Image (cartoon, rainbow, N blue to C red; front, side):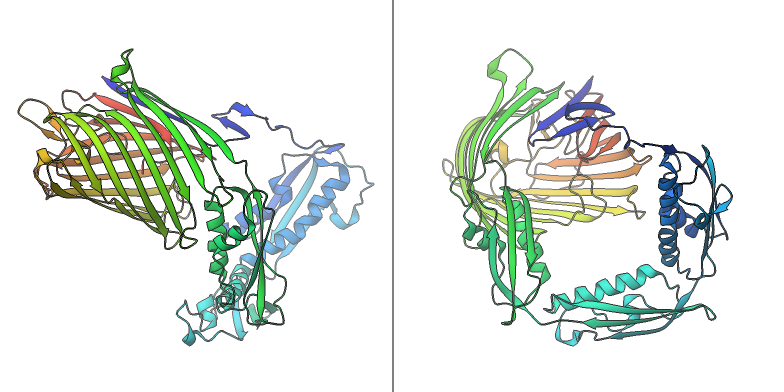
Amino acid sequence: MAAFLLCLPMSQPADAFSLFGYHLWGEKEDDLSDQVIEPQTYTLDLTVKGEDGDVEDSVKSASALYRDREKPASGTAGLLARARGDYARILTALYSQARYGGVITISVNGRPLDALGAGDTLPADVPVALTVDPGPAYVFGAVRISNLPDYNTRETRRLDTPEDLGLVNGQPARSGIILKSEGSLISAWREFGYPKTSVTREIVADHANRTVDVDLNVDTGPYASFGAVTVEGTKRMDAGYVGYMTGVPVGEEYDPDVLKRARERLRRLEVFRSVTVSEAEAVGADGLLPIGVHVAERKRRLIGAEAKYSTIDGAEVGAYWVHRNLFGHAERLRIEGNVSGVNSTEYEDFSYLFATTFTRPGVFTPDTDLTARVEAKREEVDTYEEKSISGRIGLTHRFTEDLKLSSAVLVERSRIDDALGVNQYLLAALPTDLDYDSRDNKLDAHEGIHAQLEAEPFYEFYDSTIALRGRADLATYYAFDRDGRFVIAARAAVGSVAGPSLSAIPASRRFLAGGGGSIRGYSYQTVGIDLPNGKTTGGKSLIEGSLELRARVTDSIGLVPFVDVGTVGANAIPDFGDDIKIGVGLGLRYYTSLGPIRLDVAMPLDPGPDDSDFAFYVGIGQAF
């Protein structure tokens, strides 16, 4: 038996989309190149002297004659313009490789480039010769930097010497190091409250000694504090509220990180299709730097739908309606519903969820959101059936772009039918979640970590029981190469419920494993505690782990061998001696602009009676 899962979300509008070379919707871009009036074809003979492969690669990347050698030029004038532009482009490439004495020679049809004019007639497939003699590599000689900041007054990364910037005497004098040094100096002074810092340079190449002397002069400009924030472009949004949500502290020292966070806050509101936060061109006589915000609002209402299908669980369909700006302060109202388990004509077997969520950003601080949610659902999995209605209200505070804390008050009434019988529950809980996410890409991470710590103390009124449910998740990523073509991804999770006996804990609060986000190869939520009557129920503890090697074999195709392990225990303290389930498999990735499309095939090594021999999982984004 095989399992197959397909997920097709349709939650965001798209102007056009193509997949696997097939156009799906929207306006199709014209695949033809810009029309050439008088096509002039040519053959290129490129010679880069020496044996340095990096230099040759740089020349090829910079040369328009080489890059566009398969494309005809627009007549003689177009070919000559392409060739003449190569002088500056290749010279810049040579400087980036510390070659300051290079010689570039270009001839067309056997004649020097300077001897030709736009009125000359050239034959088809005219021969073009491009010869580059990069010359020897130069090294840094004398280096002088004026006006370094006094790092003794700040806790920040120090740049005390030219060596800290990479300007090391005797090392290759790559032009990129000089430019990066200038950028580092400007960034450092901006962090010190000088937003209009500039750097002037004097570069002298000594061809006799093959050295490059560097003189960087830093002009900090005036010290500045934040001035007034002005907002333009609002229609239904309250302009004063938009200024408040930037969090820019008027009168305090200028800090570029404050402006970066201001942009992120406004983007998170989901109200604007574009956000620009800019500084005034000059610091005022009062030492204040005004800040301008320009926004363009999105449509206020959004309708979305999603569909999923599994050969085991059947179909799932859902829809939602969102109002993104109820009262001018980016208040969001979301009404949603879905029906799942549609693999029969018996509607009594369906699972469903109906919910309404209200979110008010910027309560107490610009980084604090208030959320209220009412939900009614029926959920049926292989191990239990739950009918519940709940309401919650809580706050989410974002400390940094990577770290946020959420906490809420939850009241829930439920009826659960599982292997331990039919029980009614009325509980109050305080679910709290601390989330740290430094991944470079949420759908296809190459570096960073994602850590979550969840704690939910709850009190059940009918049996007067108190319990604490906790879970910790950690995922980390390591790329073996600069381009991230080979990445090791690892995930671990541990959970525990402390307090009453197993039977006194609602089945929805016990731990189960299995499925696409857990132990692949095993059916969803079927790995638990096996009872003497042959049924399975959730446990009081959980241990899970996953390991993947993500190998990108071409620009668009990748292979991912993986292994998942996990176990569920009857006691609050996880026990590695419990029955450990292992799933192994191989994944295929097709990389698109939306993210990698994932196809995983997994096999359980110790399948239960209800498990398939193997399972398929399809989705957008990596498994974790």
